[in-house]
Image (tube, rainbow, N blue to C red; front, side, top):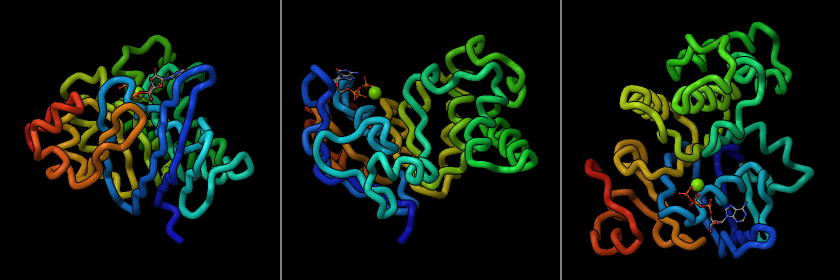
Length: 241
Ligand SMILES: Nc1ncnc2c1ncn2[C@@H]1O[C@H](COP(=O)(O)OP(=O)(O)OP(=O)(O)O)[C@@H](O)[C@H]1O
Ligand SMILES: [Mg+2]
């Protein structure tokens, strides 16, 4: 079975002491799809994405990656194929230097030093961050941190790439570079974003969330066709869909 697909079956999640943030999410994303996850602040996008590699475990329902149901016992296995870029890069970068941060994942995978070096160089190059290699991550700008966080996940060469707001805080050139990079990623990808124009350019399919539920799921053009409905979700259609 392909390890590139991702499925949620009636997933519910409640934060400890909080309200229900996912209220019965079902979706299936198959090999090679590029899917946008849209919705206003607090809709549940990040909560959903944190379920894709078991950073959060469903209160009810199941998350299945390539036929493997996420459980404590399968976490390691699933994390070999799913790479998550967090909404806040500070949650991702914790080593003394950028190169160590990017090497961390590949090293954990038990790769050879040559292979690790090759992946670090390639990943940093792909996000235009080679010059930051020896810097301390906490000294970087917000956009630089984000680029490095993306490189750190790409270096693991995941077969399912999950990104939470990958273009937030990026200047136009860095944003363009990330979009082109993601466009070239030929595995499965799900990206939560408020960057509607990126959705139009990058994602043939869009899932819209509101208050912990999926309110639309289909071809991007179709999902954003009815302006009144789009406005009722608190969104605007991409200008270039
Ligand atoms: N750690 C937490 N503890 C309690 N409630 C939380 C926590 N994180 C998020 N929530 C709540 O869960 C709901 C969904 O939040 P989530 O972060 O998934 O939204 P989002 O769609 O990613 O929003 P944004 O566009 O602002 O990133 C919100 O009501 C939020 O207040
Ligand atoms: Mg979020």
